[in-house]
Length: 151
Image (cartoon, rainbow, N blue to C red; front, side, top):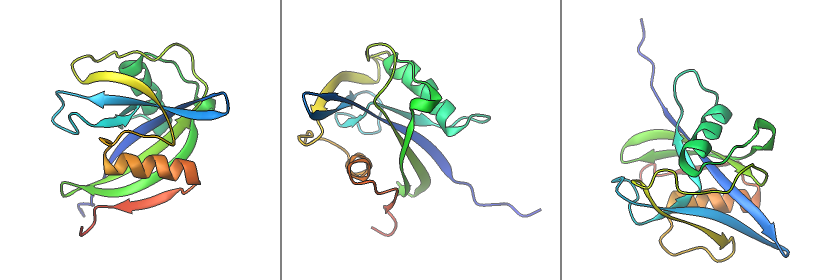
């Protein structure tokens, strides 16, 4: 039997809120994870687990990482990035939510040093390139990007 190519899948939440006509995005500063330590990341992310849909994985990650509840219908598809990260091929699937229940808090203190709302037009400098692409895709309704191949 033929052995098929395998591709990893990770999900990402772009959590936003509107205040006085401005759009804000929640970012987490990562720590002690080896991946993107001391960089800001979108509000939560994680790998798709066997038997989960992409939306189910994102709802699980939002609860585990920032303690909020999101309904399936409140997740709005943002974009997919086909990426090669450290020679590993990935699909990075991004959704936006502006509606959710609860107040975002750090649930995994061993992996996150802070959560902060930023004006989406004034993002921090220590934001990973793929996360910049995710946020740019969200802002510009760009549904697909490629990153890291042969770079």
